[in-house]
Image 1 (cartoon, one colour):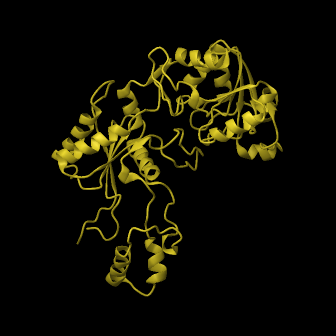
Image 2: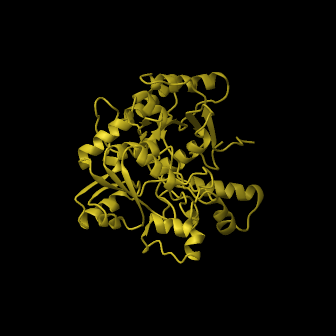
Image 3: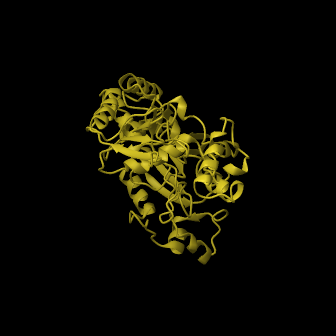
Length: 398
């Protein structure tokens, strides 16, 4: 009988990694140590993935509350700023908000409802119907929000994010006013200076605001896109993809990491003789059916990857073949027929082919990055590297 295992995803343990260390050597050494222990045998087209937080740590890509405040003052002049559509997160946004508030006199905080962009509920959607509230049309102030919905707490964190964000802003020395609406142009009733904090819809939001008469519009991706006093920065994503480090600093999304993945690939080829694909990964892209969050708070799943990870899966659906093309076959005869069908693939796209319907229509880096995020977790597993085997195999590979 041939090999029984298909795709296998393994978290690789690593030492605690600090700024300035040689990540190419560390990743390579971890793979070689796992191989020496008999825990894996490198093969061509295996995948090695490195969590973005380790890359940013090695780069020393950190900024402080004061750095953010200085950038906000420079861009908005230190006056009233409308801060719209932030996600509800202590880890992702709280330190950013402290810096933003410290850089202006007043924050007009506009929250989308019933949930933020990544699915954190501000309000139980069932209550919208109960209270006859239309989130596409109705604009609520703080008094009306509290009257209708009271003090809602997130089911997993136990946080009332309205109360929490209000406290952070006031503690940072700014006044605050809350608005609840889903049309970004509503903020222009309060101020013409707007910082939009949405992630995946940010370009549309900026376009709508500018067309509606906003005077100063910056996205959160345009804060800390250059170094301030020697700080970290991300020229492409700014504060997007940042995480809390301490009560006064955040770690930014890593920058300039394409050469890193190419260098790791080259080193592994040198040491193992195998052509291994390499990627940097952040948040996966998948939805929690209970908490409703769909996870992807980073601007992309993978900011850097080797060329072999470009594209989308090009697969046939086995159950479709079994139930349709080969419905009259069973056992070994069915297995051989399906294997022969798979072997007939010539590398051309299967888009539109009925036998491919139901396969996941997503980019390889998004699929593999999501697998990596679930494998490594975000806690104390100590596995910032993920090693994947068999991802590019199919039913014909032994």
